[in-house]
Image 1 (cartoon, rainbow, N blue to C red):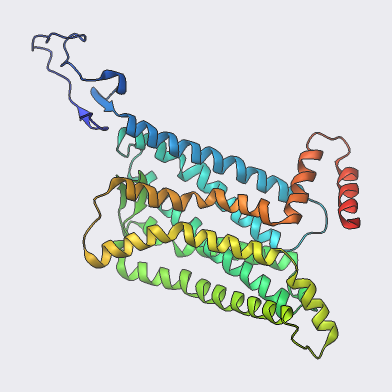
Image 2 (image 1 turned 180 degrees about the vertical axis):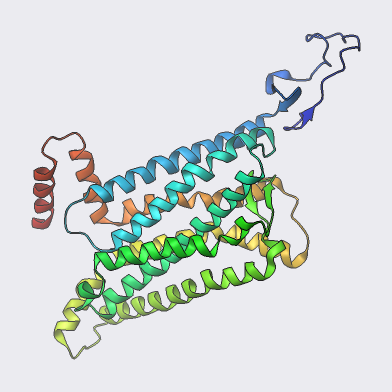
Length: 357
């Protein structure tokens, strides 16, 4: 059986060399599947399994960075009439991009050597960044659901209620509040933990049970309640429109019908569902282990549930491209104007052509 990332001490120099292909070393079996690194006078024997897992994490990091850079640049580049929901989509893309730049890449080398080598301080910072970005995403989904609710509940006043400046203020408040809510672990009240199965540095929330429960209530409570209530209302109104429910105010009924036909409703709902589906396996396993007091000793299971959750940083952008016609228009404009000298004029022409269609 191959050694999987375990450290093999050097043979003392005073011992006679053993026969074999390498002088002064014990003979190894099937060396074609091994890679030996030397660090701090210690030989680290790597397996094909460790290199494969590191390669998976590397591909994920590269994919998340590329797709979210594209999303951010597309939204920023678009100069046409846009919905305020783009502010929230930009916030999500920035959070995913930060995760792809600073969190995921630092798991590549630990996956190879099977240990955390960057120190406790960086481990603590990464754990803090992970929970902060996760909280930002949860809060942003809450604001998206509120935005979609107002578009349906107040179709005639939506543009005055949801201005771009107001949404930008909400996003700034979200990032600041999430950063402050998650900062106590940075003060040394808990120690960082390296997950040896998933190769991710996290915070030990179990040593801060009261704070962990409070943070979960503050983050998950308002968000889940708001999302369930708003989308229940949206789908209920959609059902009424399709069934021909008689509305007394014809102007309201017309505006409501136009708003409900906006693909942003289904696009935003799909983003929220994909996020929770991605993290459901991880949450389920952690709850099972907590209540049964037994850890599932399946390395591939723990590796898979963690990285399925992180993979949501990639799938959100794919769903955005697939389900949002306005974003596809903005993406088309971005690619067509990236090397064009007359960007402003070309964007105006393309937007006008789309409006005519």
